[in-house]
Amino acid sequence: MYLENSEQSKASGEGELSAEVILAEQCVIPKATEATVFSGPSKDSADLGIKVLMAYTGQIFNGEMDCPLLCEENGNLNTGEVQAKPLLPQMESSDAGKICVVIDLDETLVHSSFKPMNNPDFIIPVEIEGKLHQVYVLKRPHVDEFLKRMGELFECILFTASLSKYADPVSDMLDKCGAFKNRLFREACVFHKGNYVKDLSRLGRDLNRVIIIDNSPASYIFHPENAVPVESWFDDMSDTELLDLIPFFEKLSKEGGIYDILKEQRISS
Ligand SMILES: [Mg+2]
Image (tube, rainbow, N blue to C red; front, side, top):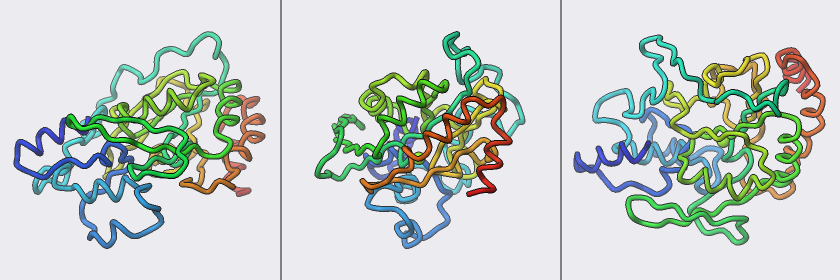
């Protein structure tokens, strides 16, 4: 979807598209200064959402408009209309009765960068405007074990604000056990107040049986009570967050609804 914008930008004589834009997860209305953009908690190009999109605001935002060109890609918040077609197909019969768990990709399961890294788990070639770029992907520790167990317990859905041309091949490499029953990409997000939001009400599942695991609170701002937050991960190979979550999800998988147990978890943490 972003490339559509880039075509419009080129037509209006604006700058070149950066390869990093394709990974950008969170988009911010361009009011901050560059100093604001390039400081903060991110490491190298990890916090691509803020860094990159702010750096390329001329391409993303249409002149003096407050609203980016991508606004409400797949939603209709401005009109209040509800899109009839759910994002997900009917649940497979093998998953009947299971809770639906929506899992984020970047900085939740992997960390990716256009900067070469020493020991990447995968290198994904991504073509942008006719030029091939290499994306270096590092797996979060224990992600294999986590996905395998989650796939056994739940109907797992990959839901990322990144573009499919990057996230789909990463998922192919990452999800060797076939945990993800479906994959949702940026076009499935709703662009709301500068962020790509994952609107769980559009999945086509009972919200009392939907959980989102995400490092970015902005992603689940419509449904914070359905969230299991995780720390953003970049390269700490001693990280055990995914491993530590498995017993919690094993317990959760036996519950009828998710709200009470998630509320308990929020209070105790
Ligand atoms: Mg993320």
